[in-house]
Amino acid sequence: MTTVGAPDGGWGWIVLLGCFVITGFSYAFPKAISVYFKELMTEFDCGYSDTAWISSIILAMLYGSGPISSIMVNKFGCRPVMLVGGLLASGGMIIASFSTNIIQLYLTAGVITGLGLALNFQPSLIMLGSYFDKRRPLANGLAAAGSPVFLSALSPLGQLLLNHYGWKGGFLITGGLLLNCCACGAIMRPLKCKERKAIACSQELKKMLPPEAGQENIVCENNNDKKPSKKKLLDFSVLADLGLIIYIIAKFIVVLGLFVPTILLVNYAKDQGVPDQDAAFLLSIIGFIDIFARPTCGIVAGLKWIRPKMSYFFSLALLFNGLTDVCSATNTDYKGLVIFCVFFGLSYGMVGALQFEVLMGIVGKSGFSSALGLVLLIEAVAVLIGPPSAGYLVDRYKNYELIFYMAGGELITAGIFLALASFIFISRKKHKDTQQKHHGDVAINPKR
Image (tube, rainbow, N blue to C red; front, top):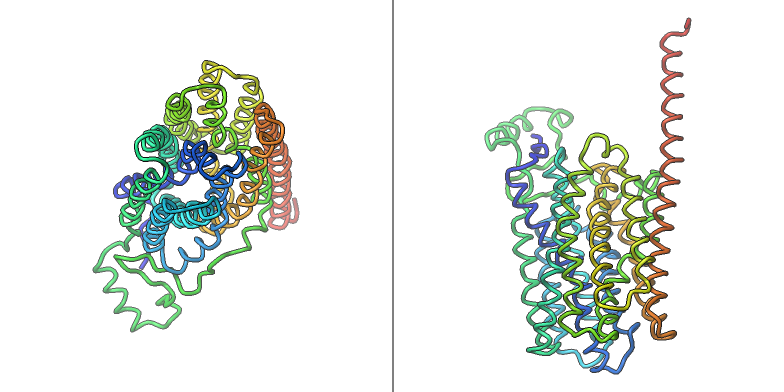
């Protein structure tokens, strides 16, 4: 009674579509909501850092709820967790439309919606990993493309809703759109056992054979994805992997600055005198470029001579993104901002396509659920620091250049650290493996 291995196709393409939508909402929504910030600042008489907290809280919940999501997935399975998450994500935005102060927005649009997105995001990645193996880099790249597609659509849509219905109407309609997360959860069908007859026969054999041969802890059903009873809800042993520790440190630094430009870009453009619709379109430009960058990067990452060196490829993407921020810090006209968006979309797409592929390559499928939950928890702290700190700098010094230098410097630092640490770690590991092989040969052939 064994489950089918990763089919690399079939129903997996439907699962990929669901993951595409979930990734789109999870990553694009916290940025696209920034089109409402100028209106919220006027409505609630607050500053840039106050409104930036909304996006930060959503992202912090998306990351920080990782262990909770891991536990729930291991206990109940992916599909039920995603259905509950969809209801929470939608309900949070609907309730937020009735908010009368910024604190209520933090609790509703931030905490509740962020938790709902978290309960959708991680299970969708787990299901994608179970359906794809050889084509996994391509699948991850295509799923990650959901973020730019949705960003390019949600940003102008948000500005349109704001112009016609105000921020409250926009939040209410967005809440309805988030119900699509429930539909995505419904299609996350777990992998079946090989044949119904094989299951029935195996169940009969279990009654006749002793427990060791019957494997009594394995439960296999067609319509749900229950886990073995002895499986840990959250496996902290994955932290013993030095490669994972390096990855966590690098990602913490990355998240400090990665989302800062996109969250504050629209407000920056509006302050430079750019019309509201054109300012919102800047995020769409990032999205359009990102659409092609992610799947292309996924294809390149799947090449035989690239895949073993994935961490270096990821480091290159981080350096590219950081240099884009630093080199664009002095752009003030619309043409300069458009050029920035083109290069930022390309580099951001590379980062998005590679980040989870690198993690899965470090810990493998068996440890991916727990590792992802722990990684996202650490990143939640960083995302609560980054955007609000950038907003504070703008409020304090009235200078947007500082946030580009800050964000770019953090990405460059992370890229250099990951490349150097990976080189040292991989070299050490290869040397250790060579020594072990040599000792093994000596033990087998002591006369050598």
